[in-house]
Length: 116
Length: 108
Image (tube, rainbow over all chains, first blue to last red; front, side):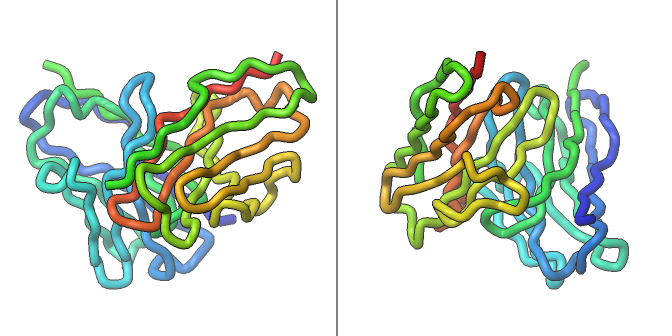
C-alpha cells in the first residue's frame, strides 16, 4: 500500500524554527515528486511547493518562496518542510502528497500551532 | 497565476438528486490538467478526477468530470449521504499549481 506518514503535531512560539517530515512507503520514493499543501483553520487548500526526491529539484509558489524550505532525504524516503522563523500566521494544517501535478495519496496532515 | 473560481459555494441536495459543481479558470488550463478532490471533515483530501475526466483508482462511477479550456465540471450523478464533503478543483498545467476555493456539498 502506498502511504505517506507525516510527523506529529507541533506547538511553537513566534520566531522559532521548525521542520516537519513526510515519509513515503509502498513505492519507489524517487519516482514521484512530493508536494506540500497548507490548510489554514476553516479555510481551503493552498499549494506551497514541491520537490523531486531524485535530485532535490524544487518549485515554490511565489506566496511561500523565501519563507519555507522544502528538502528531501532519498536514503530514508522522507521529505521535509522547514521554517526558519515561524509567525502566528503559520498556524495551519500541512499536508504532503505524492505527485508533481495531481496528487495521490495524501499524508494525514501535521498541525502546526504558533502562539506566544 | 491561474485563479480558479468554484461555484456554487454550497450545494444542498437530496440523495439521488444530481449534483453539478463548476470550476472556472482565469485563463486556459493547458492540456486539461485539472483535478478534483474530495475532503470530508477531519480527513485529508482524496483524489477523485485527474486530467479533467479520468477517475482515480477506486472512485465510484457516479463521479465524473468534464470540460476543457477555462470551464470544468464535476458531476455526482446519484449522490449518497456519504458524498457530503467539500470539493476542490486544482489546475496543474502551469506553475504555481492552484486550487479553487471549494464547494461544500450537503446531501440530506
